[in-house]
Length: 428
Image (cartoon, rainbow, N blue to C red; front, side, top):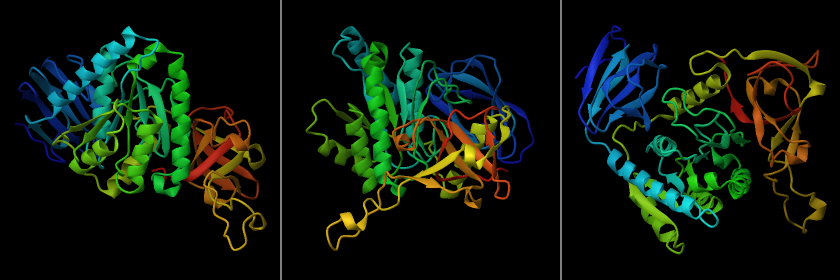
């Protein structure tokens, strides 16, 4: 088996994979890796590889090439690690897909009343939730369905930048390198990378997103039958567990897939026993799942933000724009007293209102902050409004009262209302 360590000379090499085995790869830190399928059939995250076409994977990228029937893979470039594994949970994953497919067909046969599978993938950090979600979505799209992907993992962000919850229809198998194509994502800005910053806001946005999707499903039998796949975050204890239950309930999930944790599986099975139409299944996590340090997570968040502005292969050219302070309004959600002391019972302390929208002054604190551009028409609609995208503040000129920011496109912003969280980025 060919093995490339970090910093090895760039060489082209071939790897022959036996049936139902996979090649697990971590691309080197400094150079991209080119890879192609020479013969046989293989897939990455559930998407089939086109024969003979080179794909280029960026540095740090981790992925696995799986084959059902055998394949030969050619690689050009260096890897941090690469090895083949013949013990994978793929058969159980594809069995789940087959069951979901059956339910979609049932829902399609009786479109008036029926609802396709609403799958929620849960489990601790680094158990392979987003990878399993991608596979289930790509396999469904390959069968001609258009499932909705819902991403509640604000820490990493599979659909857009971190700090958001989002949903998008998946009409084609997901590109192994580029990820999810952003045709019509519905994105809500939470603004932080952990729900503990503002639990009430997180719940409010989950509810808002669920209600919009519910309305869309009502008018679209195809989306309703295709169902949804919901990816969640890895915080599964205490408040994290409560938020999982809240999401299961809010999205009316009817299939709960628990990855790699016995305790969570038995807790959910017990608590959901009273719901006869909810199935809780336990799945094994893949041996290819790597534990990531908090430093690595921080780095990958930074990559995700950079990718938003510059593209995964550095092929986008964001625009630097200048605006007057008076042309824009920045707001923060949360904090501030809920009611004046005079309106409270004697002796009671005012508590912070987690959904309060408060204006933010233009000052140096805005430097290197990622701001969301809200579709709200008025400040009091900010919590319930989705966002158009992001800008990144590169300079604040207090004397001239001007702000310089990076935006994916030139021209005016779609709204003057900007939302600030704790999301920052140091452009490198």
